[in-house]
Amino acid sequence: MGGALPNALLRLSEGKEKQWIERGRACIRQGHGIAALAYYRLVVEGIADDLLSKMLKYCETNEQSDLIRAAIEMPRLGDKLKAVNDCIPTQLKLGLGDNPITFLYSCFSDELHYDSADDANALEKATHGMNIVCALLELMQDQDRLKRTLTESFKALSAQHNQKRASKQVKSR
Image 1 (cartoon, one colour):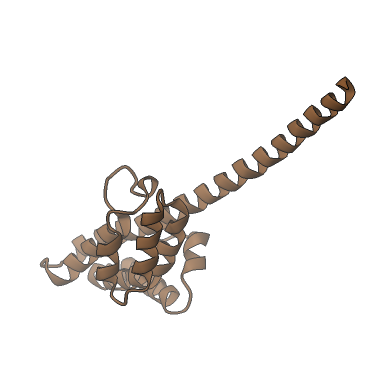
Image 2 (cartoon, rainbow, N blue to C red):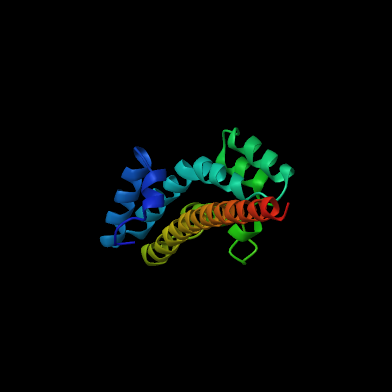
């Protein structure tokens, strides 16, 4: 995570989250994995509601949408993640079966609270964790862009096709 931050992450991270990302990146550059992990966990906590809101577009059922909306209103992140764990849309589970936000939060929390954390292990987890956050955001952004392109092209082609059909029908009368 030493390069430029993806635009999707920059748009989601304002204020405190942006500061935490920068501090986490600085900690990684200095080899302070535990500190980086702590900052990145704060980032996940800070952008969780925005991520959940973005995921609403990909829900496969109304029940999933309702669960995510209700979870966004919950005060504790752990409760939110438990509530939505089974309703994260399939395409966002990255074929691994896990809710990526729950997985990240669990990995970060376990390393900070339960595992005998060492900087080298925490450094690796922090780096991979933020790569997952960035990839997830880029995946959602790509799907949004592809859906827009598909919809716009379909509408344009449909309009042309229908116009041509209508003119053929008028000529045949």
